Every structure is written in C-alpha cells, then in structure tokens.
Image (cartoon, rainbow, N blue to C red):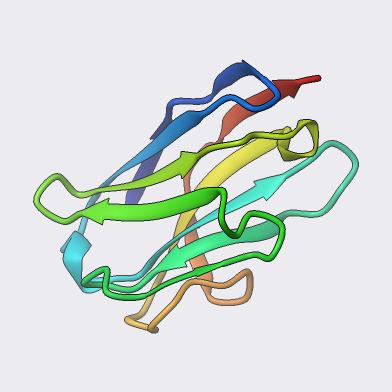
Length: 124
C-alpha cells in the first residue's frame, strides 16, 4: 500500500519561504515520478510541479516557475517543494501525489496516490 505523508506547511508572510516534504512508503520510491498539487479555497485542485524518477527533469506550473523548486532524495524516499517569494495567492492545501505506473511525470490525470495535504497560508 502506497502511503504519502506531507509536512512543512504553515503560516508565512508574503515574500517568505517554506519547504514542504513528502515521505513515501509502500513501494520502490526511486521507480516512480512524483508531483505536487494544490487546492485553494473555492477552486479546483491544480498542478504545481513534477519530477521524474531519477530527478533529472522537473516541470512547473507557470504560476510558480522561478519561485518553487521540486527535488527528491531517493535514499530518503522523500520529495520536497521549496517555495520562495510566496504570495497570498499561493495559499492552499498542498498535496503530493504519484502514479500507479511508471509514467514519466505526474499529472492531475495520471495521479493515483495522494497524501492527506498540508496547509500553506500566506498573509499579505
């Protein structure tokens, strides 16, 4: 059973930084792409970033490009999301997710396993 547990959310002022972590268990972590998504109040869940299995390639939503960085440590079975220059519009519940298969990236369509989410609130 694949389990994903996020941590690192909290309250931060605009312009600040947070680093989210997602610890995975239940299968060979290094064999699967990982992704981060978020859901803001009153909005649908949206893609934030994804990283390929070995971590050689990363992809970002335009809204976070240049401010957020996704990375992974396969030895620790953990994926990270470093968030800098945070804006009030980044306020959301952030989820990590992974696919059931070895697709190259994780999208809202391919994601099969989800964490419980961690709240990020950015004050103005």
